[in-house]
Length: 526
RNA sequence: GCGUCCUUAGCUCAGUCGGAUAGAGCAAUGCCCUUCUAAGGCAUCGGUCAGAGGUUCGAAUCCUCUAGGGCGUACCA
View 1 (cartoon, rainbow, N blue to C red):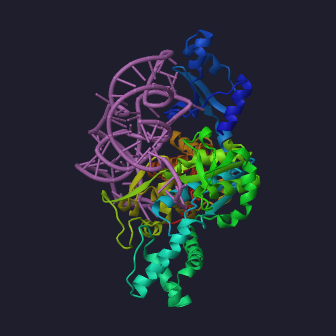
View 2: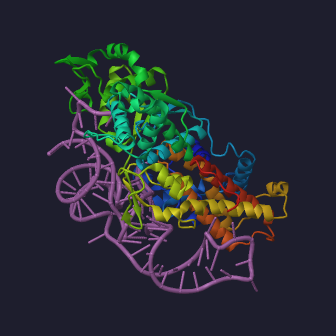
């Protein structure tokens, strides 16, 4: 809608005109402060310029009115235009808000180590990434969702050790020497029991079997993770294992050319000139690769697969890593600008205003599955999607457990359910509803219709700016308008019943589409 | 120290390609069901947009400095 207006103005004035939403809808549907910036150039007062521009529109079929107010130019779309657009949307519901953007994008997110279940911080990245994925796909981008599995290196060794120690200590009753760092938690006890019943006690004692057990456990844990993600409607297309990439090592190193060098038996990457503080070790003097090594071969592999753009969603604690990986990408001969890294900040939970600790499991981290169990996937997704991801976030679990209007996800879903109930109750048949024309609406109804038709712009803006919170924000505002309208206007038995129902169906379509892009199903009844 | 993200109502957060009177929810105080779901609506209360300068017709938004906080600054992942 905005695009069409924007395109029209571009043709007319031969430049892009900034369109914004007026503070008060009574001013019109769109407005532009263009006269202010022109006033200096033209040496005329903004008021006069705005007046002249507004008058130049005279009769245009897209607009009902174009007026100048205090230097702003306000555009009011014509009823015919809005009706036509709404009718199109209702009969092409799948296409509503979609686009035909071109481009392939590899989106990597979550990528949590397969050494334990997901915690609440991972959930934020998962929701953010999955929402971006849904938005991008709806807009037409060819997107691949990928999970990078760190199945090599120290943490896998540590997993094997921790698993055996846990088993020996809790199942075999042995006194064990715990190392400084080790994994613990209910999932590990469960795995130890499974080792015992499947492989026998010896497997827990035989240190030469640590690696084997670690790899076995890694797969089990990955299954856990995949299930956790499934519970919040997050799915991946591809999983790439770090270990599988090392065959390519020599070739990748050669490809980096002067980007890497050997010093005192260690291999380093020359990242210091490229935004990093100093060069980084890639291979230790004992030949073991560092964490960065895995990322280098992984990113090489990503670029060799030939996507047009790459988005990584990383935890904020990885931000120092961006420069290094980008340095590697340029040494590999690719454009580091094609990789975009979005950081998702920390999450902490409150319960009735107090810091929340889950007591039921060992360890201090809060597991995602526990939170999902408490508040449900919908509330979790809506809440995480509502907050911009570059700010540390605290939320109160008690507030999200409530099933009333104080919980935004219920508020929005209730709006959808109210509409569906009305449609079901009405004697009107769907054909009559669709045939009616949305003209002569009251100011409130017109405002509601326009708000509902804004969804496509919101989707595009949310995706392109990577600010997914714009979508839930919009849905809350739309739901609020709907609830107010519902309260003020009795629909069934109204002289314009068919017309109003058609309007509400547009609202429902917007809510349903918006929710589905958030990975949440709209409810018809509550 | 350096890098980076941040600081908006009592609390949790939106609003930031500079635009009309800074917004929601929670909390607090009231009001509205003989009306399609009160899982709702309305009203009141609550702000020096961390602070100080600067840029300009116009700043929560851009620039500089200061204060406070998170994260990073590993041959850990």
